[in-house]
Image 1 (cartoon, rainbow, N blue to C red):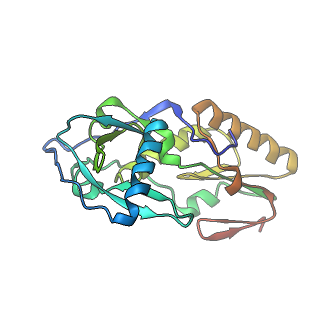
Image 2 (cartoon, rainbow, N blue to C red):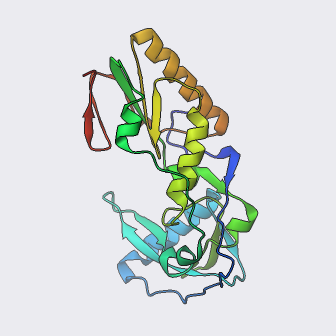
Image 3 (cartoon, helix red, strand yellow):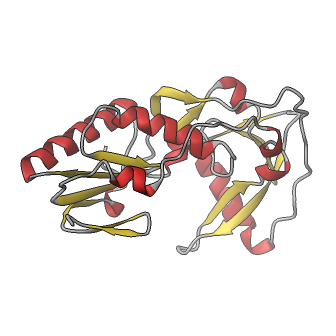
Length: 230
């Protein structure tokens, strides 16, 4: 589960609940800068191959896409859901924990391990009803998301609920969205906790990005704070 492949959470699906008076919204595609056209098409094809996106013929919903150039030069596509589905989503009230609440659970930790989930939201599958709501319109036509994309207003609350289920009952572990922090009062306890968390993540189908994970550190940066044994 420590690899660069996109995981697939199989135990829980994400559900997007609409307001009772929600009305489908369909936008025309926005022009794509010429320099981005090839990259956008390649990214769409990559997402289809990975089963993140699925081509569809018709839909009452359609959000335009926003292409973003990443530091490596490749293009990431994002649906502009703020103009379609987001205003019509029933707010998920599941609480996102505060940093004080999280750190209070890490008493007497000596060293720290930080796990980073690879494209965390995209590891969570949408249920069938929700897939039909999260639709983008592109130069290649209409596509629906099979996985939960970034840009959905309820995505943080949905993901926090799932990751809390993943680490439930495991001591010396906390999670703020896709950032998991593990510790222990000694090396043996730390290792036991790490093994439990990795096992649970694997059972759910999640993968971590090994290049962004840190193991058995004296201090780590977590949510803008430097965390050490003091």
